Image (cartoon, rainbow, N blue to C red; front, side, top):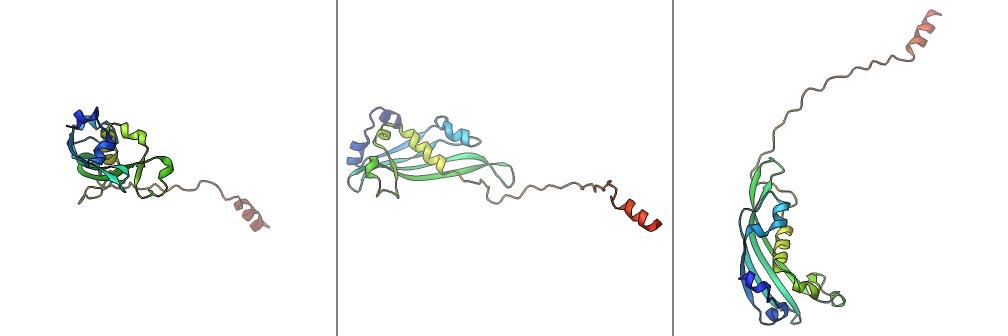
Length: 167
């Protein structure tokens, strides 16, 4: 259904009519997410909810979930990580955004973007900073024996000490 709407997506009219659009994105379409991870394990599914923020500005609520493969930073093994993303995108002119600090504000020109970009951006922002698989154990490693390096330099005062003892 999302594919059909891409060509006729009018964010303003969808927001005025408070439309809700469920979607499923094929994992092959999530190219940037696949590049940022070890791979996308499932299709992304969710819903786009259109509304008016403060009764004036078009807003899109992006709610999406997917599974990706990450490398655990503790065990260094691959594991499947579920991602859940929930974002609100408000479309407003730059001069009207001063009071919208708590919202992700996009310019009106960005309303014409492919909604798949909004969805994929939301998933990218949901990636953990440090991926750690729950219950994982740290990698065991052994440090080899450190060879003791003996100082081969002669003491510069040894000759002086020998001279003082002769006198």
